[in-house]
Image (cartoon, rainbow, N blue to C red; front, side, top):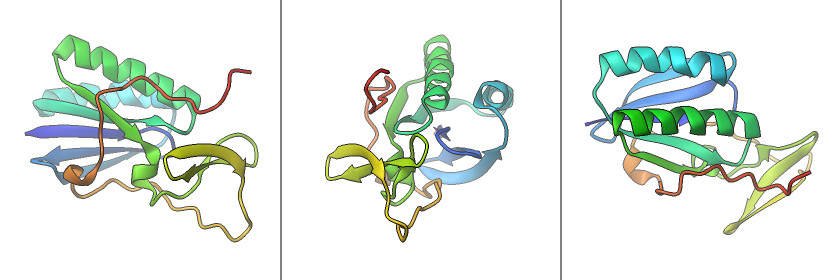
Length: 150
């Protein structure tokens, strides 16, 4: 069974192709999500019979999350492929994620706050997991922005 994981909240965009939950192909995309994701999926849909789609719906770049959601939800509906989502903290060792200016999203237990980080705080890069079975995905795929409206 082929499954695709998309992480758009950082640059480069990371896309993992999984067979039986194991990573078989890693793709890094430089550029705008809105420009590059359609081109990539045009090829992926020709090459693979995708059974599940996964993406990161919080926290991070609002625009990247919205673009990924709309694009992947459209594929989900039109191709009848289930879509699942999870937090970006699953892919960066729960380290802070860039928010606005010099502020970061910081996970504290089940809560996410936005604050400045200490100078010695380690920021981990996003990584595709080798095994999708270890990630806590859910069916609530709507973007979660974690910031009040301005």
